[in-house]
Image: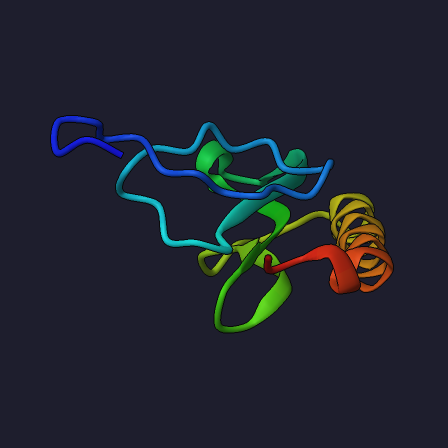
Length: 99
């Protein structure tokens, strides 16, 4: 690699959705994300956001963002189903996570 070349070579699992650049840590990979579930106060920041991926330290993990939200019972069930699906995906892919 030349001193001007800023790319890195990362072996990605086939599920990786990240466009790697020179700032990425080896082993950081983005997996799937599930649709955001809006709270009773609206979408965007006011929503449950669930994704999966990996990093060199923890391996394959599930990411959950839910900043003190109020959810209808139906949306809470939807969030629970999405979180369960993300956990199942992470468990199924943990051996191919951090490389």
